[in-house]
Image 1: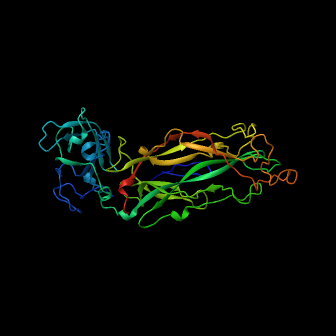
Image 2: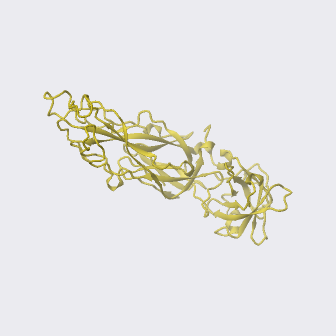
Image 3: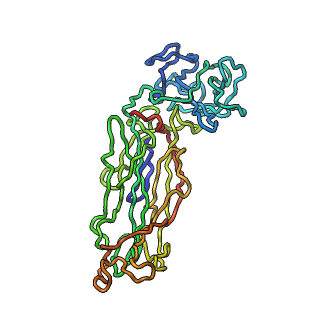
Length: 418
């Protein structure tokens, strides 16, 4: 088993990463074993169970994936096509009577997935017109029959003989983490000073959960607050997940079974013991970067928001903020998403906001700041007990950067009903 892990260094880290694909299993020879389908290819040469092209708009879905029989060494496509796939090629047909097929512009192969991918050299022809494919050796000695190209798949086709009860749906949810700025604030502590100006800094962090017909870790979904109080207040959330809705992203397989052989480790909650575990298994792309039949590419994206330092903001009285606890030292405040490449986060999509202590009399009025009552009664206690916070503004925006590795997961549109 291969295992890949992605790790965020913070108290709210996300540690991440890191079926047989058939429709009627066939062996070399002219019979069907363990399935109900009938061979559609020359099984003496190639044992292909399905061919698939993702039909996308605009029509740029030119990659066709051919799935070979899994678990039969003699049926592995590298035997005929070579370790790099270069000893084979594809031909694409507009129908069974087409006598002028198009060739492939590039190819890829995976021994572990027993899959072969080829790109239609369409020459400007609408790829929707190509309805059949052949795979053959470049010397012409071995060739398959015409294989129908599917543009839609079911989960059962993707999994083959694997049990769909073991497919884990992966959900993402977002929590807000609280930081502070103002007098007496530093990266590790807050000293409550007299007539304190205090601002709340809020930043989003993401976590993941899984759910299958057999198990779930949804109980890990939590809300936590600061221990004790901040300047006599106990309602500041350290991590606020209230109202967060877990959103389905993609699927992984519960256990290691070809082609799902890459362990994916993720963090299910902001805090708590044993919050990190293997969520499931993904597949690897072939040597051309294409996923096995019907799977999609997922990868990690990390954002490294810069520290908020003194002078970053101007307080309502026109003075610069004197300090902040949002200090991204050693990247401990980085945030990571693991998403399909088609769902890559947009530029400047990570937003940190600030909510200042609301002055009762407006800027420059001399009204009470965080003190519970106007001076002189509580002038020196540094209390924010009765203070209000309002006027949320954008502190900064930052962009996510894509990371490696790229692995292959089950698309969410195949996960309905499980």
